[in-house]
Image (cartoon, rainbow, N blue to C red; front, top):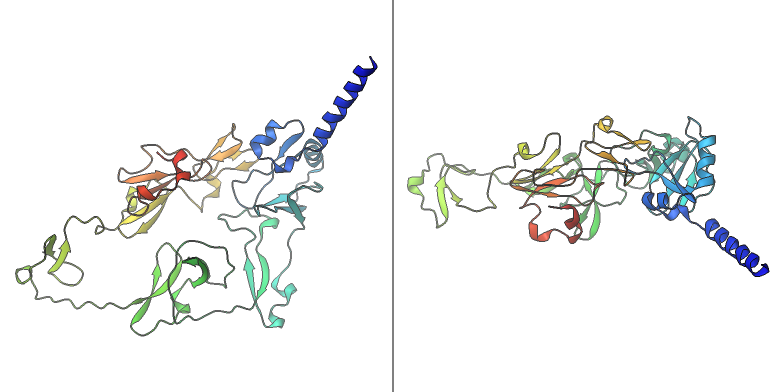
Length: 352
């Protein structure tokens, strides 16, 4: 009998140690629900749409719900992902998160002007649309950068995270992050070049000036084109040699190929259709204390907002449907923009 009591006591202590050592904050929403009643999801409004809040202990979640107020009382940031959430009451210390008070500093508070520095407003998170919350306002900082005039400008593509002066955007040039001007008024091009925008990249660059001299009197009767070319009206004259049956030469991409209300990005004769409607945050459906994005639905099983998966009817027959995961929008792409052979393996599970 005594041995039995000792075993029960040790078992009770073991269970108690397991319960007290549960790190709920390290669990995602699905695992958090599985860890009930030790852990429970605490749904908080985030600066960027799609974030579902944090996983915390039952005691903290219940206490927060009891003491919750209508007004924002503070903010927390995920140390790993940088996601910012607003608080409406005391929550105590949460592992993996840092608390910070509601931002209220201004450029005048920093005294940038008195130090001879420029004051820049940096978004607290890089997403669109961002939540209209006291926790999500842009933060001022002093910068030694001023508006730059570049004489030798090259173009880049991609996105990067370096902090750039106002009216400059960060882009990769090779493996290097560079701040590239967003309008031609900031660029002085060398002689023989002109400044032009790079559509879809929000940057500008200098290109060699081409001034074609069109010969109105030239006719196809006077021109002999090489094999695989035919004579016709082109951009230089009425008798240009134009390639036959070459996929790289074609018409400008037609945005009517895109599904209704999707964002269209043209890349010459190719293009992308993105399931994204950034200026209509009210279109979403309510989901677990938040609001889903355009075209998302609330998946109560996975406890998150999701987009429909790609199928054979999603995109135009000349385009391919790509989707990284259910919470990401679908993308219809022409094969000359994203060839089939270069699709990463990580896209396979959600791509037809």
